[in-house]
Length: 116
Length: 110
Image: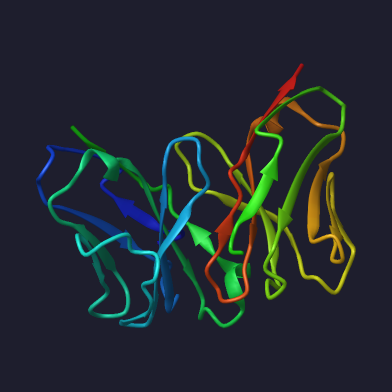
C-alpha cells in the first residue's frame, strides 16, 4: 500500500484481556518501529525491528508487552492482561532500512486502545 | 539525559503572524532533530528536520534555528495560516529511535 496501515483503528477491551495490534508497513521497508502516545503527550518509543529481529526493545514497559515480525513485513504488538494505564494510541512507523535514521520515517494513523 | 523539553504547551497566533516553538535537549550525541505536525486522529508527519552541522534550515514558511552550544532548537512558522492549526512535536535522535518533546498545540485565528 501507499502508507503504513494499522488495524484496528480503535479497540476497546476489558481490563485483564489480551489484545493484538497490527502494523502493515510500506512495502520494501525493512525497519519498523512501535511508539505509544498517551493523551496530551509526545510518542514514546517501544520497540524497533530490523527485518525479523527486534534490534531494540528497550522501550517496552514490562513483560506484558511483546511484539513480533515473523516474516519481516507485518508486525503485531501483543499486550497481555491489559490495564487501564495501557490506554493510549499505539503508533507504528516504517523506514527504508533504518540506517539513515528516522529521516524517512512514515507513521501510520495509529490504533486507539481503550481499556475499560 | 534522554529528555527533550518543549515549550510552550499551547500557542494562539493571529493569521499572518509568526509562530515560534522551542525545544531543548541534553544528550550531545543526538545528531538529527526533526519537527513533526500532527492532526487529530492522524499519525505525526515530518515537517522539517536539521542536523547539527548547520544553524538554520528553511523550507517554505517553516524554518528551524539550531543552537548547538545552547543545545536548543526552534521552529518558526511564518505567515501562519488557520490550516497550520495542529499539534507540533520536536524530536531528537542518534540511533534511529526518536525522543519526542511533549508537544505544542497551535491555534491560528482567522
